[in-house]
Image: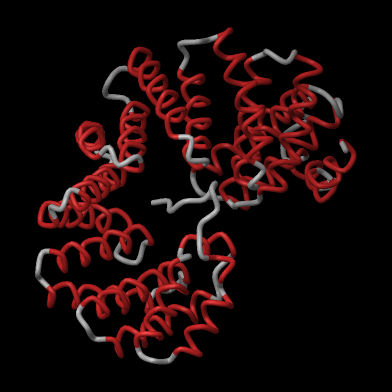
Length: 406
C-alpha cells in the first residue's frame, strides 16, 4: 500500500524536485530544501496559486523522501498538501496521502501524539467526504478520546468535536451533535474569547442544528448571537448565512414578512462579497421569492423567480443543481396559483436539468419526480405521470445520511 501511495504522489515529479532544488545556491541541504519548498507551497496555496503550490509540495515531498521514505518530514508534507486535494475535491488522492502520513506518524511518534491525531482527524474528514461514514466515525471517536486525554481544553479538540458533530448531524443523530457543538462552543469561548471566528461558527452550528430539530426559538437565539459576532468580525459571508437561517426560522413560525427582511439583508451581503451569480446568492433569492409569495406579494415573487432563473441561465459557469431548484420553485409557484400549464412547463425543464445531476444531488431534489407526476395526473395525463413515477421511484425519499445543505 505504501508503494502505491508513493507512486501516486512522488513519481510525477521524480525530476521536478531536483530541478527546483538546483535553484537554491550553492547546494541546499535536504533538511533545508524540503522546508523551503513547504513554506513556499503554503504561501502559494494561501494566495490561490494552486498549480504552483502543488509543484512546490511535490518538490518538498521529493526532497523529504530523499532523506528517508518513512521519515517524519514525509508525513508533514503529505499532511499539508492534503489541503490542496481537499480544495480541488481530489478525495482519493487526499485519502492516499493521509493514510501514508498516519502510518508514518503512528510508527515514529505514537498513536496519541498531537501530530498523529491531526492526521487522523484529517483522514476522518476525507473518509466522510468519500461517503465512508462508518470509517470516519471510528476515526473521529478515536481522535476525540485521545485529545480529551492530552489537551481537553484546546481549540484543536474543539475542531475535532465540531467535525464529529457535523457527521452526527448528517446521520440525523441530532442529540449527539448538539452535545458536541455545545462542548466545542465552551472550549472555544474559554480558550479564544467570545469575539473569535471559531466561536461565531460554533454559535451558527448550534443555531442551524436547532432549526433542523424544529426548535425555532432556540435556533433564533443562537443565530442572532452568531450574526452579531460575524458582524463584529466583518465576516459578511458568515453574517449572510446566519441571516438566511433566521429567515428560515421565521418562515417556519409563519412570519413571512420577517423572513423576507432577513433574506433581503442576507442577499445584499452575499452579492457584495460574491456577486449575484454565486450559488448561495441564488439560495437567498429563491427563499426571498417564496417569502414574498407567502406575504401576498405575488407579482414581486414572480418577477424575482424569473429574474433569478435568467441569472442562472446567463451565468458563465453552469450550475445544474441551482437551475433545477429554481425551475422546481417556479413550478410550485405557478401550481399554487392555479396556473397548471405554466407549472408543467417548468417541471419539464427541471426534469431535463435533473438528468444532469449526480446521484447525491438528485437525492436533494427527490420531490421533483413525485410533484411532476402528481401534476400530470391533475392534467389528466395519467400515463405520462405513471411513467415518471415509475422511472424515479428509487429517489422518492432521501437517504438517512443525506440532507439539504446550505
